[in-house]
Image (cartoon, rainbow, N blue to C red):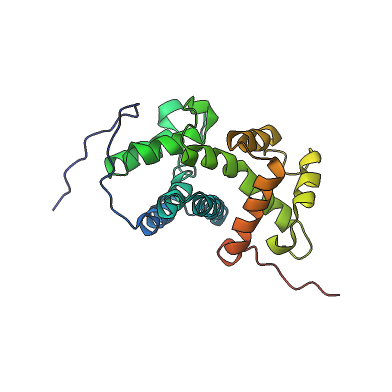
Length: 216
C-alpha cells in the first residue's frame, strides 16, 4: 500500500511542538545513518554530539536531546552541500524533514543556528553550544589525527592553540568562529578547548581517535 504524501513544511519562526518521544539519540543516529554514508561526515556529527552531551551534562541540561541535535545538525550536508542554494540546500532541507517527522522547532531552530548564513542567531544554551563546538570539535579532531599516535588522548590545549596559529593547517576551519564560539558561552577559549578535548576523549573509540601504538 502506498504511503500518503506528507504535507510540505515551510521553515519559519513558528513554534512547532515536538511529537517524537525520548530516547532521542537512537532515533537521531538512525536518521544520520540513513542520510549520511561518508565515514568522515558521520564521525564529525558524532564528535559534535559527544561535545553536546558533555556540555549538557555539565549544565544539567537534557543530555539525550543535546546529543540528538549534534547528530542531526549536518544530516543533509552530504546530499545538499550547496550552502548558496538558500532553502533548497543545507541545513534547510534537513530542517524541513525533521519538522515533518515531529522533531519540533526547538531542535530545528538549533540546527539552523549552527550555520551563520541562515541569519538565525543562537540564543538558547543548546544553540550557543552547538555553534561553539561545531568548528572546534572538527579542529581538535584534525589536531589529533596529525599526531604520530593519532590519539586525542595526547592532545593538549597548548597543541590546539599552536595549530590555530598555523594558517595552513585545517585552513577551512574559521579561527574567528572558534573564538566567537567561546564568547557565546562566555567562557575563556582555553576552557572550552579543554572541554571539547575531554568530550572527544570520552568517545574516542566511536570516533576513531583512540590512537595507534607508536614504535619507540
